[in-house]
Image (tube, rainbow, N blue to C red; front, side, top):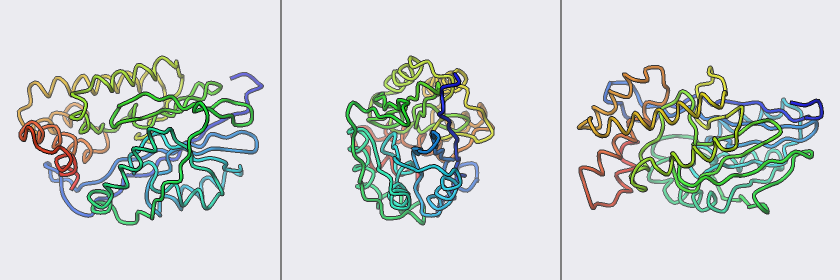
Length: 298
């Protein structure tokens, strides 16, 4: 970075939370995935991305942000999955910050609220009231102390209407759930778009931004943020999933093969939920996919 660049970023990774009930096919207790929140800061002001989803997470994250001694002006949401934003209201109130998202993400946030009682509150305790106060901004672009931050809409990745946040002066993309980093990927919603083609297109849009650094929304906190590596490994994970879907006859077979291939990846509950969804749809053609998508989490 040139000497005139006064922007920086730091990442807070929330540890995986235990589920209220259930075990995985290999006997492990169900747990969530680590969730990453990114603080992008100048000399005086800062913005925060994807602030997780429980009251305890909001408190810990808020204390961390306060320790950075910047004025938090905005909270940015990359996509509608509740684990990335249910706590936004608590942090917005604490810091007097605005919540910002694209129009598509706001639509998906509404869907997450509609499904909260059927999924999120059954699995995780401590989720606060989560009113949707997010607003859009003109051209999905604003400035932090003279530096551009841009929402780039990339379409379907692990859910619909996803976006990433591009900060050109940092060579940084905050990638939400488009890119993963050392964590099993949520594959279940691929049944809604006939496979991984749209996700691959979303990855291509991220790669076209030519970032040096990527913060994945779900990441192993011990890994670096190298953009080339995380993009390549995300593509590889999808390629391997496609191979397995042609050869593994059951969700358990798929689950076990993924663990064998990626033994150090975190988030095995997400892997199982996705496998359950894909194979459940295969086994029940023509049925409503929504309860099938939920079933693997419970």
